[in-house]
Image (cartoon, rainbow, N blue to C red; front, side, top):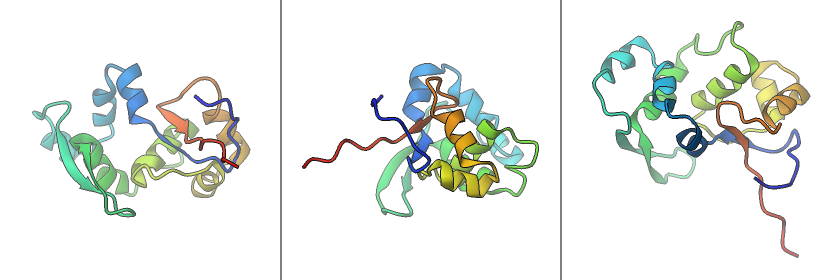
Length: 143
């Protein structure tokens, strides 16, 4: 982790590498977000089943987890995926799933979730990592 302190402009994302290193049951957790249709479809699938996915912004082909892809491309797009009862951390996590894990700043998250950017930043920029939500800190500019 960089020593630079994140600001409300710092982009964040779900670090799935963090999940793999810190949570043994991350696949079980991700599967809990699947809609009933995909829960049934993945009932007998291997935990690390990989598929090819094309990034809509860069057109780069990436190998992604099948469950992760189903979440991003379908389940997270359903109308009640994020609702008024969703906690702030849960809402941020679900929002990243819904947008394909495209990095967003606390200010951008604030606009989408209707929560203050400072509150979002304090929640996800502390020493404790919640749900793999981590900043993308760029290296210092060379000059």
